[in-house]
Length: 287
Image (cartoon, rainbow, N blue to C red; front, top):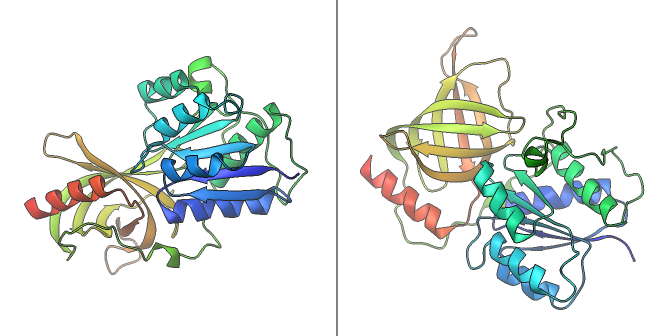
């Protein structure tokens, strides 16, 4: 029997990206997916898997609740479970460890970071796959990992674009909540986080429940179209309003000249979390 992996995330775009990387790099892998913990648990009751990759923040049943349920199953104690989250603070990681997580991956992540975690856990479980299209090291890395707490580490992977050949058409579904989503001018601040610890401050120009348009300073390490992003919207006191997952929909010069120091970037959101969108709706209404 080939390797069987379950991918759980409420964002279709994220699930599709992960499934593509697994199928491209693990010959013969069987990949199953679910949009939340409840439906993932239902699948696990009818079949066994060799690895679970699960988002933390999901509606209906969170990744933490799914992990607790898996560890309580008669055959779930030894199943490798990698938690994926936009929160990489130490307390969050410690909580995941206490619940029995095998490893931890912080959004946004690159394809190399994802594959390092997958190959590492499969090797520990005695399920090392045949060499795939790309070489993925089985060593853990300190960035966004349980290794942060144990002192382990490894080489930092080179930045890659995990969405280079993916279509964004899967993002057409809108959240099932009632709210005005007509863009309006909004003057606010946000932090854009990308893989390899790249963080950019930006000024919000327009925002809807589907996307955010903002301005940021031009740098030598600009994000690319389709690159995964986490948006931390700031309130007036500097605290975070909401962590929203998305991807770079477009990026262009902010001025009509080649030496412009300003870049306009549009982030399209991929979360389907009603609570997040309710928070965004209230934020937009107050601008």
